[in-house]
Image 1 (cartoon, rainbow, N blue to C red):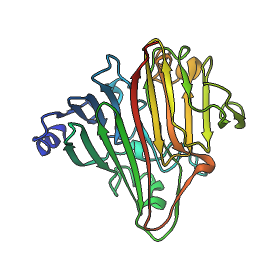
Image 2 (cartoon, rainbow, N blue to C red; image 1 turned 180 degrees about the horizontal axis):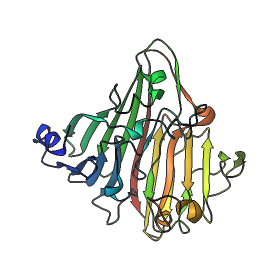
Image 3 (cartoon, rainbow, N blue to C red; image 1 turned 60 degrees about the vertical axis):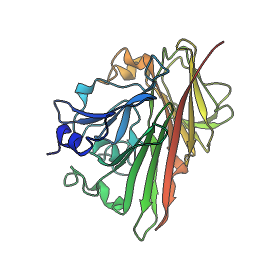
Image 4 (cartoon, helix red, strand yellow; image 1 turned 90 degrees about the vertical axis):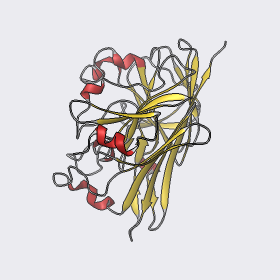
Length: 309
């Protein structure tokens, strides 16, 4: 069994890196470099915390570390939804949002860049921990899935899928990122004005966005056919979080509000007020087909700017 101590030994020459492990055996990689602090979970291969040193408040929303358990998705940070987004299109008992977020990833490399930023590369193993119980990996065995994090004053994530097989493979996907905000009723999201979206709480009707996105009730929208950057404007925190992306033709905006959140143990009756999901995705008809010998990359960059007015 791999432990945090064994992994720490492998990367002992990185003095800005340390590893921790909770009671359920989930290993976290912690980064503290000149620009930011960050935490990455080997379960799900996902970043769960990032805070530039210019900020007194975390940029990503994260739940209690003690709740993380093997085989269970982590709600918080930037979960990797792959190779399908939402429920499986035909088999209802397959896991929501795919299998990448419920399996343990392997660290390929950790580097300190000449800039002082930290690069972390990880891969989803070909053999999964729960493969016997769930054969859902079979259609995707020829896909090599990796993720690269560049941690500095901004956060970059590159999710790469390479098709080494002989057949075309269709995927949907998302970086299901949870952002820390002051109050869901006080923020607005800019950059999607005029975009069409699928309203997932109103019978999947297709609607058009008018002006900035504001919140006064549950909201679950998939903005389609959009490559636009967007931003979260948060006056109480005096900051704007800019979300830039490439390789993504959908953007998902989500907040469950009180009724739905109260049924989720990791959100409860209060946490929903301090988070919003802005997800860079390829969903619904924006599914991406990876041809044999080709690869697809979904990439994002998150940056924070101070609001002075």
